[in-house]
Length: 272
Ligand code: A3P
Image (cartoon, rainbow, N blue to C red):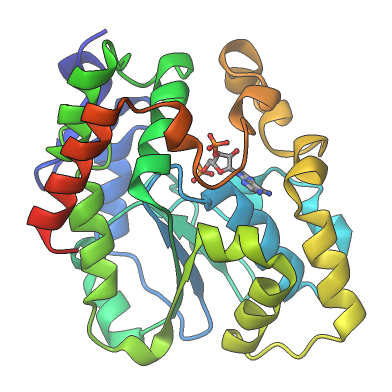
């Protein structure tokens, strides 16, 4: 199916029609944040689901029962959920929106934001596999063509560059934490500890260790929540396919030399 059939345009960016985005984003524009809200902000394929596992575990002091509900229930989407309000504090949300697309209340209230970023070549690699399988996305087609679309921001959720820059250059930095997928891969325990510190949630060392262990790729892959609970995903995207490889640097197996060079040239040009 085509972009026009599957995507809706909001502020010049493609969003998924499947999740009724136009209606939800209108509702979100009026949304009131609370000071103790926690927002996970990511570009797609950058560690969103991973963070939807880590942050609730930190907030719940390592209590694994918080993972019994699916990730979209325990950390709902700001752009896709019409039932954001009546949740107990601290409320946790996730979003693929850019900083400048947050509603007025966000800039007044300044909730805490955890911004997770990933090497864009790996984001591209993860996306090309995912877009192929998730039926609510336009099929990527030939790789080089999709690469051009990705680098031009003509894909769902817009340009990786615009997204990352919007959060990195955000004002009011004191209520934001930036962390990379690669840092989380390199040392998950340290990453969990840093996120807990940012959230001002004191955790014992063994709790941090337990959370990090529970959130290892191999353990999340066998986790029974998330995608196995969604009829849509059962039909179209098996959980094992969503939790694909979970490594840094897989782009080396995906991009040709010419594609990688083109990527580097665009990256340099965008001055990220
Ligand atoms: P790959 O396709 O490269 O394997 P998102 O949740 O933002 O859509 O990101 C999905 C990517 O994060 C997928 O990358 C997925 O495998 C990876 N991922 C999810 N959980 C992970 C974990 N615990 N450790 C490492 N990578 C993880």
